[in-house]
Length: 336
Ligand code: A2P
Image (cartoon, rainbow, N blue to C red; front, side, top):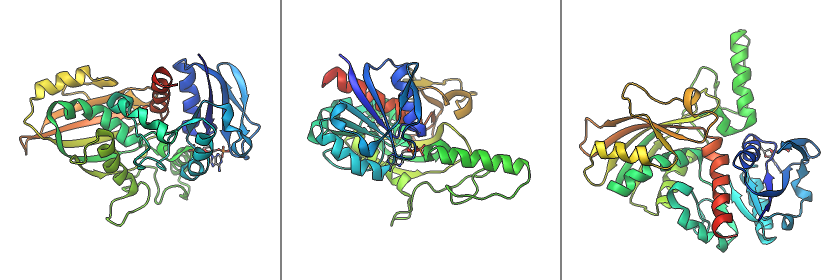
């Protein structure tokens, strides 16, 4: 059986990656509909060696598609996901718009694919935030074996998480600096080239940013356990592709670090770098593939239940496109 698939945001960074991933993973696509705004309607996108013309989403009839993969921003999803869902197209949404609705499943296939059945409530499935996805893939085996009381995490997030204009901004500022020209910033609040910015998304009333709170809400929803406490600091760094995370956690029960190494060696989607003098980085390892890399596993010297690890993954792939396509694969295998 083959499926008609609509990709909304097809000209964007994640949308393009979704189309490439559908092709690479040989998702059984019958017809592909590349949707974007009127700005790019009529442009061509390559898919399986053919040119597909971009359609203005406003003019698209969603009853033609079985599955819709959306990554055009929260307000676009807010408008079009209900329209698509109503027309019988199951929406897999990459934005944060529906993630916290109790009747919308939030899925990382390696972690909670059984919750996918709830998609029937609204015909909408939410894809988690990129930083949450890689953290969940790495921590799930530890959670299952020992429980987790709390997680302290600092992220080092690539600019591609903020879209193609953000990638252009880092490239342009870097080039300008090399040429000693003055710079302007539009996407980021401060210069991103050769700098780090401890703000992603907007500030909330509690002083955390929304990106940080996403990691709190989503971790608890995905694990189905609101007793797991999460304390994040999310930081943008001048890296193009691949988020890194420094994670400190306290297990609920006393743990055995040798057993945790074994769990990480066997964990689906994870590559564990066991060599204590080696470690993964976004550029040398994660960028361009679908693996969640874990390294620098250390027993916390300040707390018997504490553990440290370093987790790296390509935010546009496992953090977005690949996870969405994996959800679609589960969907067609078990439900459609
Ligand atoms: P377009 O190229 O027509 O602007 P990125 O996250 O890399 O910035 O990409 C955003 C994606 O979302 C692009 O494909 C963009 O299409 C699409 N998009 C943005 N706003 C809208 C809108 N109002 N309607 C449809 N697609 C939109």
